[in-house]
Image (cartoon, rainbow, N blue to C red; front, side, top):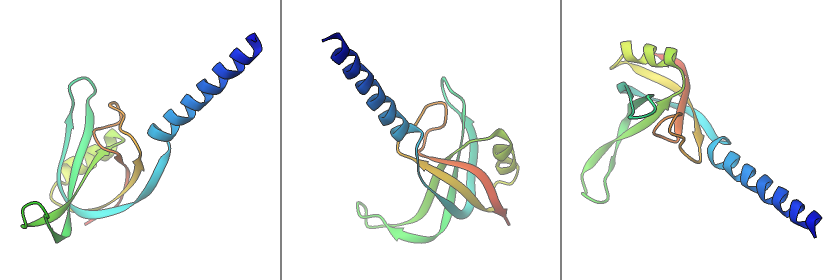
Length: 122
């Protein structure tokens, strides 16, 4: 009976570890987004993280209000050096490589999208 209990406990722990990994550490998608950098800020109450927003070209309609809206890409920034580069070049056009996760960790940022490098700046 003890043996089955230990096997069950180990199986449940492995399942929980796998679910946590899948939710918070598994890279669901990655790609490049282009647009004009609207802002890059360092913010947070307990964990100070780097956040930013790109305004992308093109317009879409907001189904709730019926008005035109621009495409916005809000993201977190992985590295302080990338943040510094974005901070001093606010208003320029960037191509940013990002990783998308299923969940948000407070020390990683406020969004599921984490920028890990600048591909191009114009």
